[in-house]
Length: 208
Image (tube, rainbow, N blue to C red; front, side):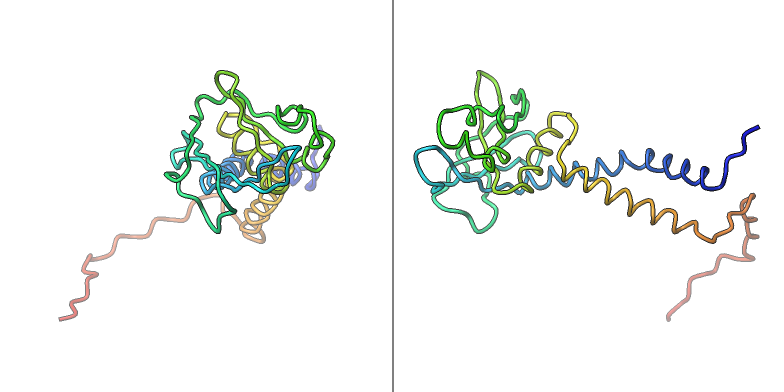
């Protein structure tokens, strides 16, 4: 007969707890990503012939069914309203999200193809009739937010480093909080007795 040590039991308990709460944490991360897409992001327009001197904005509708986007004359100071963005793409029309060297705009001839930094921030939405919406994220954080959010919209896993880090951090915090609740607390084998009913229910105080 094999007797498990206390540490083995604790490890097994923590593992089971992780498996139980991980879906809850992933759903929380998913909602955060989608909320950020609803806020929207300003992207720079890039090509091999000119500087990064034009902007465009993209944001998800609050019902998560449409992407609104359009060109801007300058970088906005805050969120850009949906009705000021000229174009829209139904989420239902999206066929795939590709990144890096698989993006159509990264396969074109020119200097951008050789720019590793730009390559790591590139992603594209492919939709009906061979359409494409090409992005260069302003930084790695926004790249992770958008690729995670778009994959979540398509029912796919969020695979970014940011999601892995968020998951590890939130899981660790949640497990510590749940274990803290049980630390040095004796859990009784039986529930406490139900108290007797009061002699009357005149609990209201008459302020008059």
